[in-house]
Length: 276
Image (cartoon, rainbow, N blue to C red; front, side, top):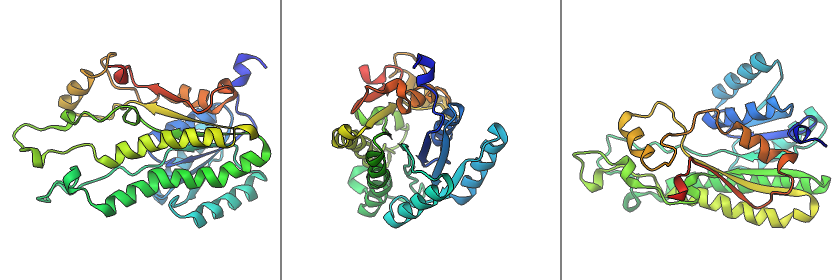
């Protein structure tokens, strides 16, 4: 097999959780451009339909879009059977991408992003999606991969799954410490946890042809303020955030036979931020 053939995902069936999100759509594009069939999970019905139409128009290819709450095992199992009914096979690629982007009420007198005020119900909610959901999807679809003797599970971590967040990035002039926003504890715990889950799965089914790796991207520029941009680029040797489409080639590498001897690893792609 030639080098270029290793990147071809023809006859592969991939699932992307959180597929209607900012990076989820980029992951789907990478898979479609490599000729894979793609199923996306999300809980936002409107966004699901918009993404489905977008890819149909751009690639003239039907993307299966399913509303699935990945915190509920019965919904994942139901989706699994819908996928089999449509494709007559189970997915052999799974990208665990789903996460909750926490929104905290600005008008509240208590800053709930801070550890001292962080509520248990918010902790449980975010962990249930970002970490428990990844475990459930890996369990349900990984079992079928192991039965078939081949599969790839890719967990989307973060540079903050490798390093701690620098809370100075979020600091605003004129606010006392108790009012300052911070990157919440759940983000770090989930992203570090995904790397731990990666290592566990990588050794669990390795003898049955299932590989598992993690991807740790840096922040993507998405109309950030000049103030934030100046702060974060000073922490990155390359002096910039990632472009929105800059991770697609890495996703393809990690999901394809191009990375066939890569297992249990975390691929950092953060402009060098985690080196400093």
